[in-house]
Length: 85
Image (cartoon, rainbow, N blue to C red):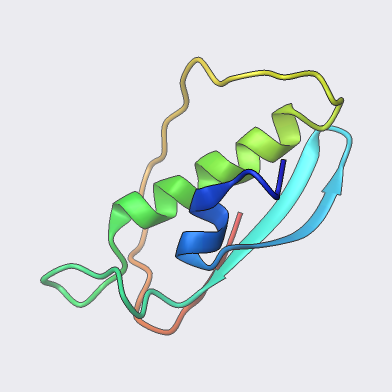
């Protein structure tokens, strides 16, 4: 799954750990994808969470897709922050 995940490579996300029903991904900073407020673009945070969720959902080697999920943004991520999901 990692080899076929273009978003993972393009955005510089790293798969740190995977286990049944769990995955840990990180992305270092928002150096290229930030908004007018100089904070990390919410779409990047969403992609990171979506990717972690996808790896966790597919950890049983059975192809699955997500029906829906949502995120409540409680605080901004700033340039240079390391984000994990």
